[in-house]
Image 1 (spheres, one colour):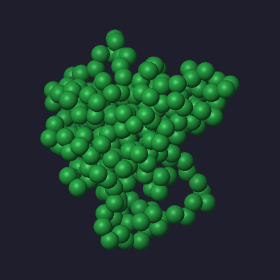
Image 2: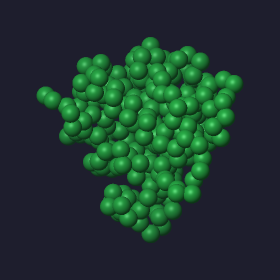
Image 3: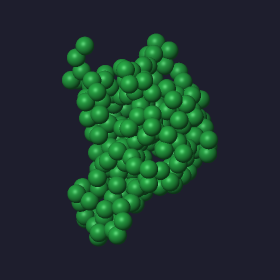
Length: 236
């Protein structure tokens, strides 16, 4: 479930640059309850069974130390220093093999109901479970930084790239007049903006199909895109 925040630019936006005040770090135990809260904040339209809880995040650290990459803010949205760091973003996933000849799957099955039990250090692909940014910190390039951190992880481990199911939060505005296939095609063509898919396309992902029944998301009829980033630096 790859669902980043909107990254729209605004020439009149004079909000401070928070790049130096937000770090991307591997998860620590204290992050877990805050990551659970972040899920609820970022995915209000998803069924509760689709959301990961604190115990899942604690388990991820045992399964794969780099499973959860956390955006840890040391400044408020205004740029003022915080008394204690705040969890404001997440990029999570694991290594696995992926069958592109039979790509249909559900989010819960792939992530083992949130436990990441299908992680295989020798797997050829990184499966992206989640990219999320707290609404207070959106529009500041943080989603791109999380994607870049994932790509760096893929390269360090010599994997082929990233595969994920991507939600389509912009579709409800158009569903009365467009099929989901037509909506995706128009977003890919640059004719429409989707807060998730447009960001993914800007980060080098390609749409390689639709996943029906992927997750409980009434806004999109439970559909998601199958998105893939193939590392151009990968060598057999």
